[in-house]
Length: 476
Image 1 (cartoon, rainbow, N blue to C red):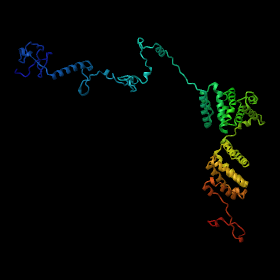
Image 2 (spheres, rainbow, N blue to C red; image 1 turned 120 degrees about the vertical axis):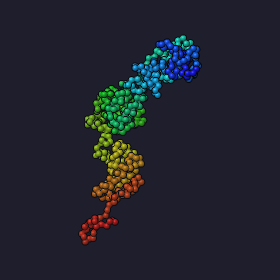
Image 3 (tube, rainbow, N blue to C red; image 1 turned 120 degrees about the horizontal axis):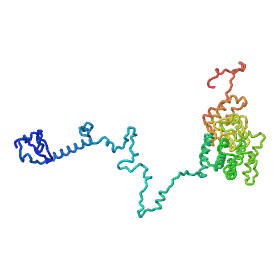
Image 4 (cartoon, rainbow, N blue to C red; image 1 turned 180 degrees about the horizontal axis):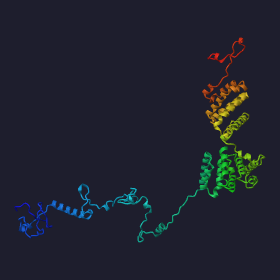
């Protein structure tokens, strides 16, 4: 063949064109019906040439492109959509987000679909295995019809755990101890209203009174105020009487820890009668046969308090005025009384108990001041020794803090100019008393003890006039 642009039938697949744009053999004849003008005739025009592997792949790829472009990536104007690097975009727009876990709306939260339960390799939502029902085959030889019915015929009901009496008592004790700190009766009423049952109200009253037995007078006053506020809103008169009856029955056991329990219970009963929480006749029924001697003593104590001629107004202070609420003059008077009782009895244990009952640790410097003044006025060596022993005991037991002890002594130092007017020998007595108390006093406090200065006179020719202070030597 002389011409380089010979056209052959490639692979028998139909017409093809060469690189020069000449129509290949097997193409439809031209309208004039003349033979091909390339000069090739006969069997040579129908000769087949083997197709190269590269040409087959190219043609196969081109055919796939034509199919996909025509089916999925044709725009409305008939042109194919191009993607990255000029390649057609073969994914239909409505199938782009087929396997996406994100929300398909513009208002989505960006969270995975189905709560993370969908997708490949996912077993389901966390916790869904609890609610999965097992598919059991009744034809299975190991199928248990009783177990199947028991697992499918289940009725779920809400069960509220019931509190036992021991747990209830511990809960009430916690509430009462917190009440002693904040003193809010409304908070106690709200806490008890949520947990107390009607049949447990007497037990709550008994627990409150039993806790007050082990505390101070101020806490007992708070307990009386609490019972008065709970009356009518949470407890009735019958509930309070039932609680006291429970306490009267166990009074013998309570006395093992609190020997004065009958007197304390009598005070509570009298206070409840004065607050209109109990009828007066309840206290006067003290000769009942079912009561033992301690219970009758408690009721007799209440009867004696209610039978006083000063009406029931004094029962408002049956527990005294607690701590800082007490007037300063009253506290000072009670301190002087207990110091006088100590000088008579010489019992430091009783004096310590009385000081604790005052519940004024911030005012103990007044006690030290009164003790020193009483020692200076006594002018008795035995009383000095007794008072020194009391102060040593208060310091060793930490009933009086070192700061309060020092403040009491320094108050005496500051008032020595006035004290010496009534007690001329006050400086010498104070010096002797300080030497006895040296073991528990600080060196700085002893060093700061004042001494009485000497008055210097000029010569007799000056008529006995006092020498001015500015003329005194600095060393004196």
